[in-house]
Amino acid sequence: MFLQLWARYVLSQEEGEAMVRPVERDEVKNAIFDIAEDKAPGPDGYSAGFYKAAWSVIGEELTTAIQDFFTTGKLLKQVNATVLSLIPKVANPTTVAEFRPISCCNVLYKAITKIIVQRMQGVMDKIISPPQNAFVPGRRISNNILLGQELFHGYKRQHLPPRCALKVLHLLLLQRIEQSDSFQFHWRCTEMKLFNLCFANDLLLFCKAEEQSVIFFRDALRVFAELSGPHANVNKSQLILSKSASPVRQQLFAVLGFQEGVLPAMTFILPKGTLKAIAARMRKFLSQGGSDSGVAKVAWSDVCRPLEEGGQVRSNSGSWSWRKILKFRNHILSVVSYHVGSGERFLLWHDPWHPLGPLIHRFPRGPSVIGIPLAANLSEVIDEDGWNWPLFTDIGHLEITELLPPRGNRILLRGGQ
View (cartoon, helix red, strand yellow):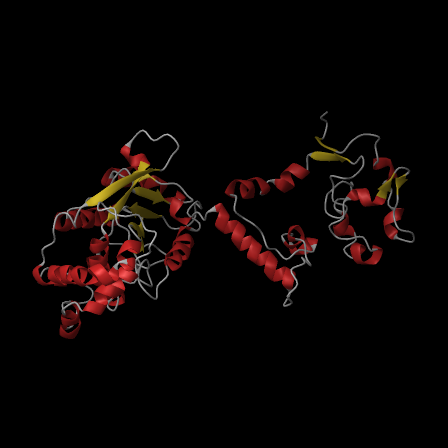
């Protein structure tokens, strides 16, 4: 009765009976043949490939053994044995935390687990709350990743309402938050009553950055630990505060005892290989243009340029540090000067190599009128004798010949060497 107060959904009588119905022979065979043949063997040394190849010989006894387990609830300790393999996470591990444990179970044990899982699949979406999007048919963990990114957006801004997020390394049920008067939702989650997102065995909790709401989370974690046993791992749990929550920072950390988290949180960082694959698909889409040809019709460097430079504002924004640096680009350009030289390093239309600034701002139709590409280097209008502009253009009337020094291409601070 106590657990029913916490449960979002209780199985009907028909669903409950379907869970405990006798195991049929076809269920056992399907479970065995659903296991990949190249999976690591268990303590008995036999992989699923052996059981499949020898099914005509051992299938009858194996089926009887599995059916007996579901009837009696007893399992031989030899079958329940597991080989625990420790895979190092780093080059030279020195602590247990730097290893990833992998359990290698016997095939018979895996088959029992698969039968249980297959029976539960029909009700998983009913008994597991909507914030958990991992391992549930019809749901995608990517939805939580995108939503988490959106909730973290603007955490470094000072003027937005104070809020915080907790990254906890285990799952728990916090339904009573919905009936609480003391809990204050994250300001972007108030309307949809969202307070948690689940990622496999990780849990993100969101709330307003005030002491009473954080205490509510702490107490809920303690209740969960008392009921189930697992406690929140303070070494792997983090508290992430927005910049506007600085006045209450110390007291919130004192309540939880968690480590301070920083953005971007590791949960949301896409692997570089994934970023490159996404960029490759975008290039392929733009290159093929509905045809079967794979020849690139638009250079990716041109596509990534801003609209005013003839691009399509597609940007590979994988580096946070470079985006921060580029914010100061205009300030830096105001204190540097260009020594043109051969012009190979400078863009003709976009770089401010001329005192008038980028030529594309003064002559927006210049590339089409003159016939020089938008992405052309400055060297395309320079030869051994000096400037080599196309005839009959207004560009040639600019007093720029004196800007061609007999030295290499350099960018210098004004007044510097």
